[in-house]
Length: 508
Image 1 (tube, rainbow, N blue to C red):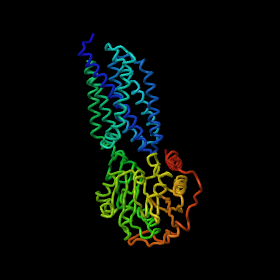
Image 2 (cartoon, one colour):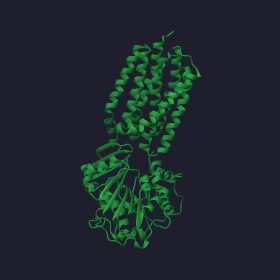
Image 3 (cartoon, rainbow, N blue to C red):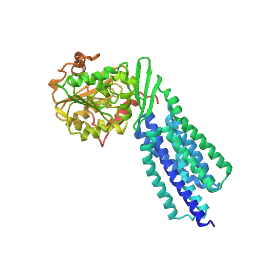
Image 4 (tube, rainbow, N blue to C red):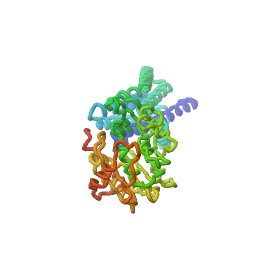
């Protein structure tokens, strides 16, 4: 029988192992869902499948444990080595599958299932180890192991979004957690004096994973470079998105989560249209709010209007606004707008900012990414547009980008109808314009004073837009928008509409 000192040491090792594997298991689920949502864009489907398939695999793993007849410590260590190897390389495999094949959903499902099976084996094998060292299996023992498992899940849910993802990114986070799995295997094998050959193998795998951790940024950039047509100059991961800047010749491009945000060859068409449609429709605009627009390009256009005294840019991602303020190439395109004393940059959630704001604005321009996930859907909701209208002065005008009127017409119609539903008493003007990098692009303008539409002069230095073109787009040739459903916080129809529209243009 083990003495009390040995027993306490073994208990500590086993319970510590239970805690660490619980943390790693949930982090793998979060990594799988986040990777799929970054690569494909449908976060609801990605996280639902990551959770569902992994849990299904865990059930299979729990049933398979009775067929494993090795020594419990050996079985557990082998399981951790396999989990570390597969889980650590999961992000790399998914990136390769997405970039070079059309089988990324198959790869995603297979990896989720295998990781789930290996996670499902962990707790039963731990309980078998307790039994092997004289701790009788009991409800009390199982409840302690499960309590540690649930506590580990809480730790993982906090550590992943607050520390691992923003500091390490997805691939390095996966390799770090994998090294944790191997460390658990090494500790169990060392403490319980198991196979020296297996211990040496565990250490070798751990060293290999740490090497992959060190080279993860290089691997990720090399693979991602194949997804972009042009050389990658900036590659950063923020807590919210992957930020990439490319350049070929005179064409500078910004991508967020692989979605093109602008091309310097034709971005002026988009940003002048947003700015001009709003500021020519309100007399003497002085105080302007931009929601999104962290690249500084819309602020650049607004500063051309001599009456503008204050531009507040609200963008949630400080890494985007810092890049736009400090990167030489981006500064050349945005003319250093975010460093202009008339511009105030606020890194905050646009929904919360508008809800909490006290003052009013003569114009509010909404330049957000497309509504491809639930995080963005609230910024295309009836409640959001209602809150925006409450921040407009009596003469104020709102203009929002509204996705492509050609590639995503259903989503465009929902934006227009949601603005109409959220802003009672406002005249709503949907319109579209061709941006070569994006195709036909939709906008929605709302105002309480339709008689003032396009009555004010354009800014000096406007290079593309003119009053005749604006009048043609907004007054003469507005797109027909049928009365369709409205997107709300509780029923974010905009997501399904956007995904349904875009699915037909994707080759997967």
